[in-house]
Image (cartoon, rainbow, N blue to C red; front, side, top):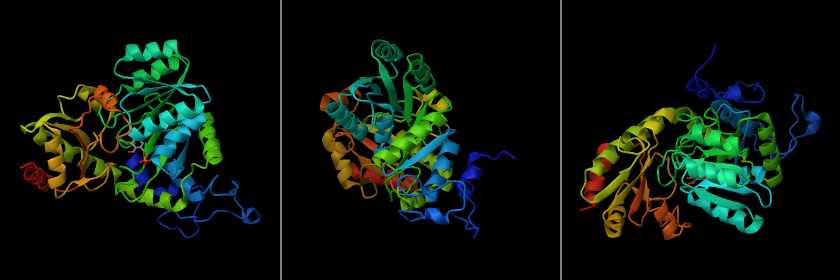
Length: 383
Ligand SMILES: Cc1ncc(COP(=O)(O)O)c(C=O)c1O
């Protein structure tokens, strides 16, 4: 019988590499650095947790299954998944093409790769596909990378189209799926070679752990990420794997709620005179709303609102009683931040302006509270 993903992820033990003799309803945590080679009876040999661990392998099998991949690696942070992608695909003097609207940590990492390994970093607006094609045609690009939706600009990228242009010029295509998650969007089915994500966000769902993962489409690429994860020590520790796994069965119901709550608040905000613009892919006035609906099952709970002034944006954050001023997103608690000040402080003012972000842009991550309370809090905070 073919089961739906939601059914499968409620029974995570079936992704374990071998059966637990006690029939535990959750897969065991093998909190060990080493394994005794003499005592192993299975086909697969475990020697050292940096290379392989049955707990981590369970979550890797699950991620590979839900993303329709050929193998996965769970990493110690989300940015470690991005690093691992670069460490796997790029060589000294390689070229990469990245959507200009990307997470500040990815932007900073690209600077590091550029300065230390002479990686040629090209940025483009991926909705300008003529420009994307031009860069691919005129440069020897090894890797194309984007988020969709993007953080912080909430742009939607046509993943199928970018995959086909990338492959036309023999470049690998990777998608950071952190804002959508596998329950909503399947980059590999749309043609990507890698889907990676920070599991710190929606997948863990409760803001209690930092982690990430990368899934490869082919066995060959999966073997490569596994090899470099061991070489660079990128793998996640078993206890954090366990913490991440706890959020997975409720991901779907949480994403539905994040989507509904955030759209309601975005709609409220766009009718307020202290707001200039609200950018949420779930709103009909979003320029890629139709594409978002065709590519994603649920929207994200993250959106941006441009206040009429920096002072007002800061006053709102200062006076709010419910919204914490916190980076990151995807938790049960609603939070806000000014990307220019926190998550995207590694961008210059000009670079932020080019992706539509100003000092008065506030990024909201809407949680699972009652919407009514959140709206009341916004009303009192801006008074
Ligand atoms: C889109 C995106 N990718 C990757 C990361 C990095 O993840 P982590 O903070 O878990 O290292 C983040 C963090 O905010 C992010 O927003």
